[in-house]
Amino acid sequence: MDRRSFLSSGLLTLCTGILPPSSIAQQNFVRTYYLNSGSGTGYFMGAPYPRSSLWCYNNRLPGPEIRAKQGETLQIHVSNALDQATTLHCHGIRLPNSMDGVPGLTQQAIENGESYIYEFDLPDAGTYWYHPHFNSSEQIGRGLYGALIIEEAEPIQIDRELVMILDDWRLDEEFQIQDNFSNRHDKSHAGRIGNTITVNGRITPKFEINSGERLRIRLINASNARTFVLDFSSIDARVIAIDGHPVSPHQPDDGLVILAAAMRMDLVIDMMAEPNTQIIVNDQAYGNERPEVFKLSYSDKPAIRTEPLDSAIALAANSMPEPDLNNAVKQHIELAGGAMGGMRRAKINDQWQSIRELAAQGMMWAMNERVGVGHSMEPIMTLKRGQTCKLILTNNSVFDHPMHLHGHAFRVLSRNGQPDPFQTWQDTVMVWSNESVEIAFVADNPGDWMFHCHVLEHQVSGMSSIIHVV
Image (cartoon, rainbow, N blue to C red; front, side, top):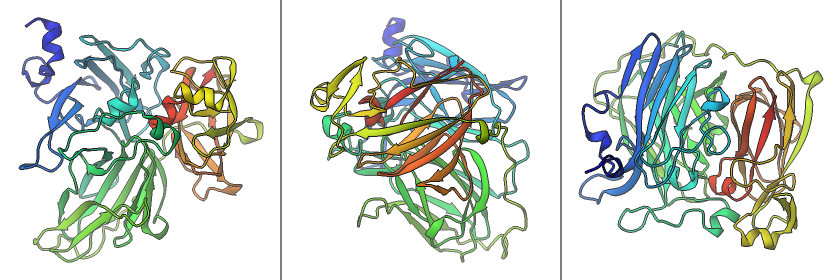
């Protein structure tokens, strides 16, 4: 077997001697990981149910957890055994433009049999994730993603940490992934919503805990389009971070944790129920359907404590520069298009076309009447390095849009003119239908940065742009 055939077989990750046994090494505060993008199989339910064909990293779903410490350097070696090109985007990390993993904009795509090394410093602690930025709807939708955890220099006191990557899948009766990626309906409506929910690749997993434990749960939404509304009302969950960045600890409204596509949230929970208790967390996002997402099952062991830990749960702030709102450059961005959206025309490749002409090309969405094609396009705005920018995002469509900015974090200032109570730092913000959201950031990272909807079917059909920082 020649090298190309060997890589294409997807067996690279199974051979000791090619990858370090643990897939990680540490040398002088540089943490090195090896990821191979390839085909594989996995159980969503376990035997006797059939195995499902997947695309995944190192033949695992999710891919290997990448973990480092704030202030260290991360090096990721990516090799490609897929039959198409790929890249790696470390979502939410403030990194150099050349390491952002956007093909045709920040790097050339990694072709079959090729490899690429990503290396960058880690200025911020928090919960992040990694995924491709090439043919994202299908590659992420088939399982190419993993958690990226940057530990705080001074962590809070907990007993245990649980990392939960949430996803939904469109499966057929044989538990195989349906092939209808980026179809016309998904593009023009809410995106690819699946019929099966998993946590860490398993359907309704059960996490065994002990009474009295303090948990830190890191939630990551890796779905193509689904917004999760998780019901934690039966337990005292407190939000301590959103999109990796600390927030004043607080209980979610009505006990509901809302997690749009690509977003993350860190919770602290003191598990004070009696042994043998079981907590079921379900999803309330879609009408009367309330599927179970995961279970927290108390063991029969005696409680490790009878009162919650008496220690602070507030995280130390990360290092983002504070926006200067008095001297901000303002930019209004209108999000429009889709079914029942009312958009009549938009400009594509510098030419005005009707919505019917756009739809015939599979393009359904626009930002400021401009349809984003691929990854390389004229910037929607240009900023000088160090400038503060205030974006006013207005959603004039009937569908929701989680908007993601690469290379930066921004403050969420207001919704529909009402100040955000926590002024959270985020990299992905949900803009609900017929809503206006104000965000602000300091353009301190030079380069061409994607700003797009993370409903992946919306991104590929026009809702993407570039912010140029010089």
